[in-house]
Image 1 (cartoon, rainbow, N blue to C red):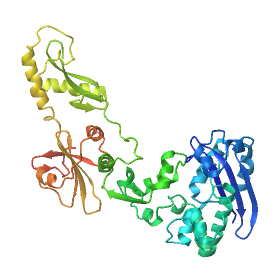
Image 2 (cartoon, rainbow, N blue to C red):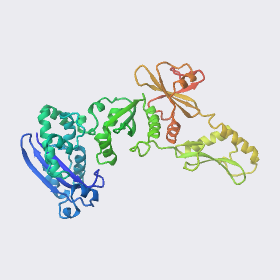
Image 3 (cartoon, one colour):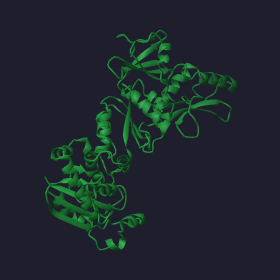
Amino acid sequence: MLFAVTDIETTGAQPAGNGITELAIIVWDGERELRRWHSLINPGREIPTFISALTGITADMLADAPSFEDVAEEVYEMLRDTVFVAHNVNFDFSFIRSQFQACGYAWDPKKLCSVRLARKAYPGLRSYSLSQLCTHMGIRNTAPHRAYGDAAATLELLKSCVFQLGGAEVRALIKRGNPESYLPNQLESATFQGLPDKPGVYYLLDTKGKPLYIGKARNIRSRVKQHFSTDRTAEKLHGFMREVCDISFTLTGTELIALLLEDAEIRKYWPPYNRAQKHRPAAWGIFRYTDQRGYERLAVNPVSKTVAPLRTFHSAFRARNWLLAFAQRWELDLHLSGFLPPGAGLPAPDVHNARIAEAVMNIRSDEPSFVLHGRGRSQDEYSFVLIEQGQLAGFGFTCETPSGAEQLRDLLQPIPSSPVVQSIIDLIPEQALDMRVVKLSPAGPQLAGDAET
């Protein structure tokens, strides 16, 4: 088994928009060094001042250095049949793979992280940074924060860990699919392995237990794995890899409840890596205004941040259909509702405005009330979402069939209203995901086979 112990210096923290300034590789077969290679690399962009201060690498030093493309073939030949080893391996891997891809090389090696290896070989240390491990183990690093010095120190660390753990433990860490190969360095493998394969909301937490990211999933473990094993060029993923120390979760039984709870939890904690809500808010609304003649009017217009709509919809077509039915139900003048061209015989403004006021006061009275019935968090319970007159009341779980609407309310976990929540509710019952829509009657939800769906 060949190990390519590698270290790089870069212009920034993630591959996107940054480049490699120095690269060192030491090939080791488990007993002796086979090759030691090192080169400065011209990244083709400026080097930030703080990077130069940290590494000592300046723009003048790189002016005549080769680009990565110039050395790509030689580097690829060294790395392609080896186990790729680095301290915080996913950082180095992401940069080198990004550079290889730009040069047309496909590279997907087995990986070994010396941070995780050291955690297993020497548990309980206060820090697993390369400098602290060198101090603890008496390893001399002749050039810290330079690729050739750090690569040589990492090789000595690897030798010590292999001796401490034995070959079998090291081979297990290298095996493809082992979570150790893609999880953040500070996250225990047992924490990941303990995640359920059920629907729910998950929380990626920092060292203080504060959420860095909140997400929903049909399969929590599978979704969390995707965060750490997919595109490593994304800036957000690098934040995860540096900062995630723990993961918690809340089971919801169904994906729909997970979607509703995710929105509420994001608005409660505002995690730094939740930069945008995933569900598109409704784009059209019913608005009330007064025209120049003093008539109160209802109109369909795009939703804006300045005026709150009376009702929201995902399309202008749905909004106009609703407004027509609403005008007919409350006997509003169709000329003034925009469905007929202007004409004579309009009602007096005070009469029309009184009808508009009464209609708007009861705008939700004709909205449906229903319960969504789905799987629970375990086999002996089921979940429900209660909708009353088109508004989300909340969700809950029960092991017994409720006997009436009041019992449902007693079991509710309320969800704060938001544009995202309302847009989800407006799509029910058309898109109820993994729940069954059941009519809510005064006697309680009809959960029998003849339920109205």
